Length: 234
Image (tube, rainbow, N blue to C red; front, side):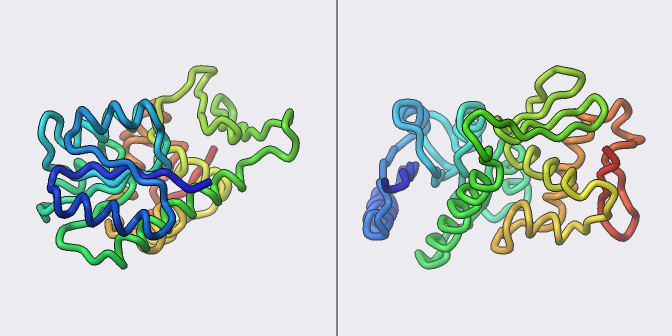
């Protein structure tokens, strides 16, 4: 079955160009012309990936991303003509997985799409239970990571983690006690072709600490190793 891509772009020429090229690659493509239509279409037919312009009528791309991220785990690649670093940070904060600045080549966009979809497929295979009734969980005192459900629980309460926060936490937990560099975390969690810098890791680490640590300013679970990276202590 072809993977579903939702294109959200108000520019007619670019929208039709994206739809044509993605369909040519074998994807099942839906297209929305504004933010509200995008949310409705995603709810009616959940996509496997979303290409989301920032400057949209009715609801801008940041708000659409925030709403979709509450309901979908599908990768979201934001498209924008603006190059301000603040936009990239805001995009990440509301749950975007990647960020591409216009003008971009179709070849680069297709590579980003394939990388994001491949990462989702690999994650599903890695976390898939060996049998339909088995469960895979990781336990660290009062913290539990449920790899089947892609959820984390602290003292029995589910944590509201964004997809990348969860993936980062799981990767750190798999290497408990080992110091991992920012570049390593960026490559393994976001992918080698991700356009953001190491600040992305720092931002997500700060969010995780706010949700996991008793005192986020003095972390004992997610420890900073000065000049080297981060270490998960459990």
